[in-house]
Image (tube, rainbow over all chains, first blue to last red; front, side, top):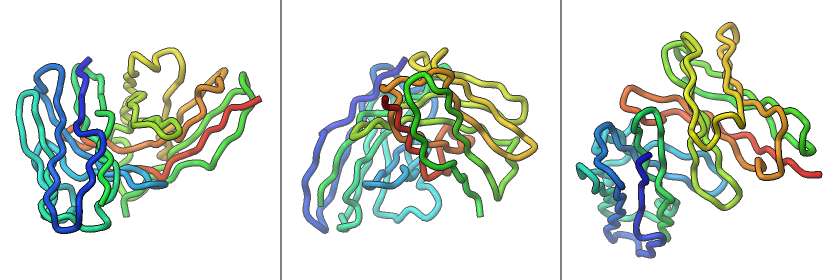
Length: 106
Length: 118
């Protein structure tokens, strides 16, 4: 099973700043990697799939990159509504795993 | 509109069987895998298992194998998650979601809160 480790655990930034969230895999990710946003009391929402593709309706300030074992979610110019927990997720041999999450405070 | 509607909150005593549901609409139910995800209070997301409604092919997380059963009823476009003997440690929010062709979960239900307490 591939373990995903996200860093930092908590990130505190101001509106307009750039956020960089990291997701590191214990083994090379050979399939797809996705990112989700979860706000308090809500279900998660898909932001990015296949490393760098934005899901339907996701603003262009969200972007994903990376390969192998290191992946990044970047939010180019933070808005107050971006406060949330962000998770990365992958699949390996029919076992799906999530990272432990990064709590982004604006 | 593509959506997943989950059954309401449940309260059970330990050992009392439980089955929660996830009804799909707005798309071809049999063509997309459905996953179940657990979120314990204040914690992160845990993948439990996945089922393909077209033929009921089911895979479980090694952490949940033998602890829960995932099933579908194609006639009503509904997936199910059930426990035969839930424990207090099963208290959590449970989400169903649809898997897309890129192994990402693109449509989520609102979640079902399950409380197991004596």
